[in-house]
Structures are given as C-alpha cells and as structure tokens.
Length: 396
Image (cartoon, rainbow, N blue to C red; front, side, top):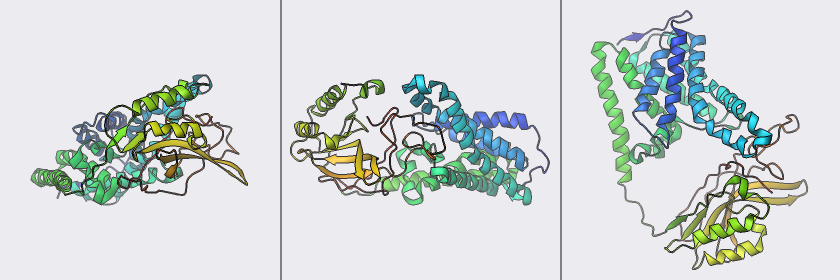
C-alpha cells in the first residue's frame, strides 16, 4: 500500500494551495440546491484532499480556513438580505456581518484540516485510509458546527443529495452526518486515485463504484418499499407579500384577503399550509380573522401556519415562534414552539452585555419552546415541522 507522508516543515506552495482551496470551497455552493450539481462534489473535495497533502498542522489549518471562507462566503451570502430590509439602520452592516460570520464558520473546516494533518504527520497512512480519515475529520467538524454556540448546521455536505431521491434515502439509516461522511468520502476518492500507486488504482476504482452503487441501490430499494397509502391532499399557499409591505400599517387586511383568496381556489385538499407570518400578527388573538378561516376550511379541513404567539406570566410577556393548526371554526388543534432559535434574528444573546438590537423588529426576544414535537393532525399523517425566521419577520 502506498504511504502518504506529509512534510513536517511549513509546507510548499501554500499560497497556491490556499487559492485552490478557496476556489474549491466556493464550488461547494454549486453542489447544493437549487443547483445540486453532483459532478462538482468530487471536484471540490478531491481538490481539498490534494492540497492538504504534504502540509504540516499550521498551514493545514489556514488552508482549511480558506476553504471555509469560500464555502460560507458564498453559501451564507443570503444573510445580507436581512440587513437590507431596514437598510437605513442595518444596511452598512451587511457585508461585515457576512464576512464575519463566514470567518467564524470557516474555523470548523480549518479544525478538520488541522486534525487531518496532525494525524498524518504522526504516522504513515495509506491512500484510502487517508480518504477515510479526512471524511471523518470533516464530519466531526460539521457536528461541532451544528452544536457549538447554539449551532449553525447550514450547508452540510449531505445537502448535495437533497434533490436526488435515491441518494438521500440512506439518511434514514445513518442520519445527516452519516450521509455527509459518505458524500465527502465519495467526493475525495478521485483525489485518492490521483495519488495512489499504480497497483492501488484498480482497488480504488472498485471501491468508488461499490460505494456509489451501494448508496444509490440502497436508496432505490427503500423507495420501492411499500408505504401505507394515504389519500390526504396538501395545498401550499405562498402569497409572496414583500416584507416592507407586510408589516406596514393597514396592510394586514390586504394580506389576509390575499391568502384567503388563494386558498379558496378550486380543487380538493385536506391540509392547507401557509408560511411563517402569512398572517402578520397574533392569529390566536384575532377572533374575526379566525372566524373567516371557515370560508377556506370547510368539511374538516385543517390550516397549518407559522405565527407568533405570546404568553403572559409573572416575569412579563414571553414571545414564541410557533406553528399552529386551526380547524374550520378557528379553534387551535395543536402546535409547536420553535426550540432552537437563531441568534440576533430571534433573540440577542448576552443582551445585557451586547449593545446590539435584533435584525427583525419586534416587541421582544423569542423564548425557546420545550423541544421537538410531532404533531397529530386529524386526517393527515403524523408530521414534524421546522421553522426558520424569514427575512424581516418580527412582532408588531
């Protein structure tokens, strides 16, 4: 087996390796929806594998950090939009905020690269084993990113498979992080093939084919599994109301009329889905608005929508970002309060110390809910929902 021994010094061609790493990190964005270009996965991760070879710990950390800057600099650039909703107050912070967040998140790929280089320095590692090692380090860093400082599990490697039905099925068995491991390992195998000794290239090719076919074949088999039939029909309505108009005084009636009109279009459905703050206010407190739901929820139909909620207590008013289910009479059937909140979007961490306001206007910070919950909705399968604050959403 060919051994891969890194240099123990400062490494060679660090500027060139860093430039390649930044470009490879930026390419990872093309592997994710809405692009989902699978061909880019081996390009990006094989490039990372190759540039990390023969560098010591400190240069590896920097190369991994540069990869992360490319990955997140492009991958989270959408966050800038939230600053431009109230551009007079926050617009100047858009670029510094994206750059700062990207620099912080890039530490996690840097940790993966540093750990990989550290282990490689201490022992001779074979070509395929080196690929397994880097994939393991990468997923360990992804897990840390998803849990440290409230967590930011955005743009996991596994998300490259989201729009490919068969390939994403193994997540049911190994989870998102397990699927990330498989994605990265498959992605860097062409890089392993490049550096492998001639007598090792056929086994690497066979391994690549086996893993790819196993991933696809296992997913295809799962898709072919008989699933209990359901005749429930879902209608999804998106009013596409601009954020600057949604919260404007007097716009609530227009917004509600628009959603009611779209929801009343001909066609059968059992469950009606509105997005977060489709109704710009506290729907459970607006009796008239809830009575009007009967026009679009006859015959036992259910509305599921994201709405803010508030609860009075001895310590004052607590606000929650929730999903609530309503029947045709306007009664709440069940609900879920988001438990993993977004810093600065839904609350300000260390509010007593940081002189920073939320990016979304509101009456107060959100309070985290008790935890994950599966909702039992009449006439529909059990459902678990996720919430993410939309740009400009708030409480008014």
